[in-house]
Length: 534
Image (cartoon, rainbow, N blue to C red; front, side, top):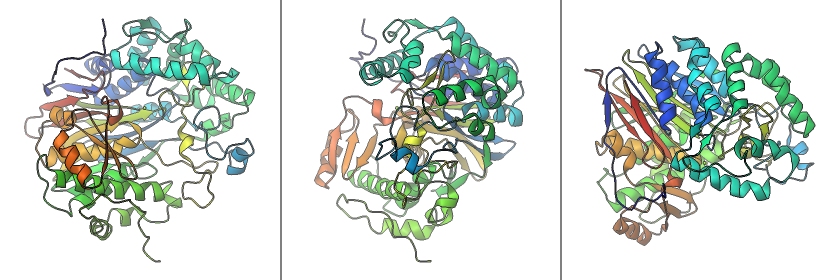
């Protein structure tokens, strides 16, 4: 039986509930959140439970050793949490180049940055949770101890990673990855039960110490010892110094709705910049080639500028305020013509991640995202712990003149972004689309689908997507209308058709009716998505 074969078209409907809802990319993780909510937790406790469970039931996309961001709506106010870790204090451009690298490597100990995930769970629990962290992590610990059967998309990407890693991860520092994720000499199959006792033990230690063990206790010592053994840069001093940062979210008004993102070092700014540019162009038309052309050109300009300028705020050569200004948006919109253009960075004025949404009957809502960056991250796993470390440092530049140049203690340009929508000061709800550089493009498309075309949450996620890949290349999904693809090609876009939807991000949406409190949720049809309700 082929669990990845779908010869017939299927569809999901929007899911409704009143007391609580969790939407994410894996059914067991969504159920973990609802379980904690039913045991007295709120939406924030549910999100922590779901996030912890995802490190177990979707390790192909995230882990304990990754980073996290959140937008939290509590008592009619939106709060932003940036729990992305910096580069180790001892790393430098010269140190990396002395190892023979001309650019940051993707795997191994070099691109490992300080993990922010455990600190994010503890901080969210402390500030907004109703239950202790130990209660929120119980389902994840159970899944890790007892094991669970692999879902189809999870199994697909797990097997693909193993096939790649078995020929490229041949040195000693990668052995723990195989011990943990291929314990029988191969990747587990779809439907096969996989357990990780070391992962369970680590989660229990994080739960019992409010994550302190990870940053200044036995778990920190294990990480430090492994990195020293394999000539890595991350040290226990880097872990001890880390603290998540509460930030003021940034927004853009798009046709009466306020779209909210985390400020830099995250790339959420790209989605806002693109929306601002696009709203200065023609009125959107349904399934219209000119509208798609203007959307794509807006995104190309915003992304080109984002990659050029976004890093730690103090290192940016242009302010956040200017990049979100009408002056910037109108100037960039004015450069868009009838044909596909090769984007160039804005001239400065002189002078493969997991996402979840959760909501409860009290009106609390959270948009949360965490990631190891590229699939299993760096490929580095701390032996016996289930801690897979991220490779977020791969995004640093080794060009001393670039704003995002590598520096010890600095946070890099970050791809993972949670989104949130409000209207007239009232919450509409959390949304997100994960998937590397697809994320701001997914945010842009979900918002325009919702606001311009009034699509319900599930339809807004199901609508065929496009993705700018660089230069004039546009990748479209297999079910993207061919007549639109042809029309875009006539405008100079280099259209490529993907064989499946795996590259186009995985999203979740929960909208709340402000009059009735009814929650309406959609989940991703491109993965093992689920909406759990109470």
